[in-house]
Length: 481
Image (cartoon, rainbow, N blue to C red; front, top):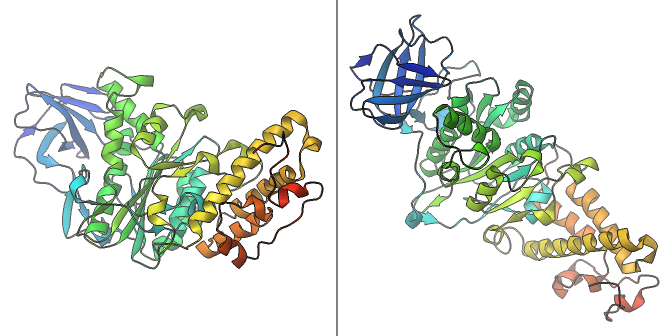
């Protein structure tokens, strides 16, 4: 990390409080300024100015304050914000949350440096998201298509395989043959999970298409706040200067928010909802809004944040505020996971608001949007039928209703369920979707154009005991819409 060190060095700190150092008598120091601490042993630590008022600076120490003697620590202010080298030198590297190598290689070098604070993209210069990022995961590509420049979070709960899904998406994603890379930022994960991520992404890293930043649970809490900012700073340079389409995967944003809460408490700030700081919304927005496309610049930054909802509560501040800022969500389901389905996506709770910008004619396949709409309509009907069966019993259902229950089972087992290392092309995904749809009678596929049905050989199939429905006649009273 670079910077021009100031000539004035302060020889003591008034107080050390958790991850914070309070320095008195400072002059000319500004918010977000980078700081260098030198301990009596000669060890160096780094910090960022959180607040400066009337000659007193509050500095967050990135490596924590353990082992520091306030009477003997020397403090130098750089006169500028924390900057990191940027450029293609990051590709293929594995670093900690501060950008220091974990792979045994030299420090990352770049022809230029950029401040990690960054800035949201100017709305006037924003190009609308367009074209897909294909993940190789059927439930995502077909029903909640990820679009270049989009921010699409994954909502999960503890115990679900969200990290496995994040690693699979990072390993398999492509931009249709155009220059593409992934920046993977993990926050607060265990050492076992860290090893899993490194193994899962080893091939992409060896190909020079991955930047991996790993902040483990026993790393300093302040580093957790820095990790996504470094990831986005690196991604912006690779995208808007290097011309790549960059997918930034950030997990777990709940760990990030808890680190923010811990620092806020150490500063003595008045807490807001569930003890999170009142600026949680604007802080999350300062991260999420750095993605997108810029008019006249090559490349794009697409953000896929993952977060765990404490106790599965989607109204918890972190998923709640994330939902306001982002463009949809992919929701993972305990029920699907209990059935052994991977990935355990709940399609009816998931949504990509920008899907029409990245899917359909000229982008994926002409039948993509129609197929997705018909799948969701069939799932919604199947859910109604299942609730009806719980009330009146399976034997009281019509033959068509029973066909919908079979459709639901086929959808889960043949379409959604796939191996952790299985990369499905979009054509394979949509062909599986057609196979599942064609288990329903043609009269139930009203959202698909006749020409498409003819092309896929969708004939009228009789349903014993329910012939009236199969020939387009109105349903009998009491069978539901």
